Image (cartoon, rainbow, N blue to C red; front, side, top):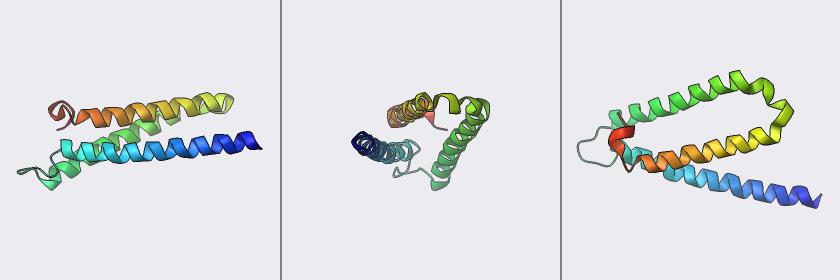
Length: 105
């Protein structure tokens, strides 16, 4: 149906936008931990990156374990919630490079 095609086009554009912003956010995170700066170590950057990603994965698994039983009854709302949370997370990652002493080890 034409309405599904229109939805699919918007969904692809939204996913592409999210991926592009994620690349920028990762670049900002790496800059925040000192990648490219004199005196910064690759080990420090790698550990910060692993801790950040590990914490994110753990929280995602915990949330899924606690809320998954409610996903089926209102899938559209959960999809919107997930997209919004990803957008908030990416925005915080980009902004964190402005005050690295607060967000990085």
